[in-house]
Structure formats: structure tokens, C-alpha cells
Length: 379
Image (spheres, one colour):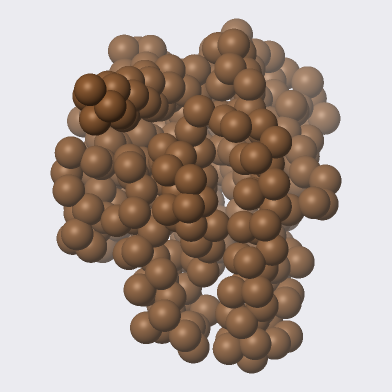
């Protein structure tokens, strides 16, 4: 289960609400920086149309499971994280009139078509837009994604942007990263850091190359927390450049240990981003008052503002490493960005608790409106 879902469920419960979870039967993972290997393997081994047909079959199973949970518990509203070929929430709303909230993290039909291929394109896109239009409230995680949702015919009044968030009790500036630095043999070196699933388009190879090529970066170290398809390539690159002792791949770590690793960073990296994402790592970096290097894009700006991170142009090959160099050589600027980042998190209320409160408030308004309409219709 994703970190986002686990954290939001916890926030709902901390606010005093009962949450009935309906999802895959396998146990949830608490590790961080690991992708969905089983799902990826199935899609890799099977032709697209076979995998997609299985997803359609799974949708029927989910609906039966969801319907049983509804009839047993009679919840006040349904909160569903949108997934491709999944219409169970839409069908439950249509059958029982249950208020339906759809959280959207990405335009999955377009994303799958671009990155892994999609055989049932027409059906996938029709099902996607159908779910969005059926929802009482659609919750995209960024403004660019909100525009995509509205382009599919969802009225703006039924769309509310709710970005990802952070738990300030777990991620805060007082977390001690010295134990991590000690284990890795680091003392006064400037430490760059990255957390999450490692993909080629992140551009960490450029960071490693710059650590070797640019004299100003010769004393820096890089900590990479997580796994991914290019991990081995990056390890080999560091070895070939003669700097394996300065690039530390710690692999997947337990979720409750992530803050300790981020605390060991001096400069946190958000190397690249798709235009509609709400990167989880960014909120955690900011909550821990880290100086951040991130792309200058609309979805990043709505989180960091203009002064919560040192922003660079993704289209410029050397812009990211230039930004890293600026923060390494100017400690005053680095300190200011770290303060700005933390203030931005607090002022913007980018927390799971705040997200849960906004969602519940919106649900309560919707429920009250429906009850009022029902009362008027009886009179």
C-alpha cells in the first residue's frame, strides 16, 4: 500500500473517524523507496491486453468486496484512490447513492500509454473520464492535474486540489541524522541526498558525473535511499569514475527510519518531475528544513513557492548541478532556503491532518446538502 494511503488513513483516524479499508488482500509494506515489483513483473511478462483484461476482471472482484463492506458498515462516504480500469467506486455510488470522492494522483491512461504501452486505449480513457465525471468530488494533487480533470468534463465546482502532505510528528528539523552519517563514515562533508524509487529520468547520473568532474564538488557525498531500475547502473558509474566511496546506496529502508536519513542530508534533491505530480519526498524535505534543489515547474512552485527551494530549468543539461554548486559554495543561501522551506510547510498547512480535515469538511457539506434535498422532496 502506498505511503499516501497509509498516512491519510492514519490522519482520518487521528481526527476521530472510523475508516473501513477495502483493497488488495496482501499485507501492506512499510518499506520506503521500493516500487510495485509484482505488478511491474506481471505487466512485463504478459502482453498488455492480457494484463489489462485481468485488471478488468479484478474490478469486478473489487466491486463485490466493496459492496459487502458498504452493506455491513453503511459508511457516510466513499473515498477512493483512482486507478486505471477500476470503476468499483463509481458503480457503488450509482447503485446506492453513496457520496463518492475520487483522489487522482496522475492521468493514468496517458501515463501508461506513454511509458509501458496500453492496448485497450479507448476503453481505458473512457473508463477514466467516466469515473472522474461520476464522482461527487474529484481531488487532484496539483493544479496542472486539476486542469486535466476539468478537460474531461468535470465541473470546476466538483474539483478540489489537495496535494500530498507530511506528518510533522515524524518529519521535523530536530530529527538527528548523526547516526546515519557515522555509519557511512561522514563527518563535515557536504552531503547530497535523494529518497524514493530511482528512475533513469531522475538524472542522478548527472549528479554523480558532476561530483567527479567539477572540482567544487570533489568533497561532496551522495546518499541514495531506495531501489529502482537504474540503481546498478549508477553503482557502476560511480565505480568507473573512481568515486564509489562517495556515493552511498543504502537501498530500501523501513518507513519509520526515513527521517533519520533525510536528517543526514545537507542538500536534498528533487531532480526531475512530471508536470502533474505532487512529490512526496519534497514535503518531507521541506518539513525537515532542508535546502532543496528542484525543477522550476508549475506543480513544484505551488508547493515550494519561489523561495522554498533553489529552482532550476529542467531543459538545461547543467542547470541542476549548477544549482547544487550554488548551495555548496554559499552556506548563507543554503540556510535561508532551509528556513524558507520549513516555513512554507507550516504556513501552507501541507500536512496529512490538514488534508483529512479538508476532505471530511467537504464530505460533511455534501452530506448535509443531500439530506436537505431529501427533506424538501418529502414535503
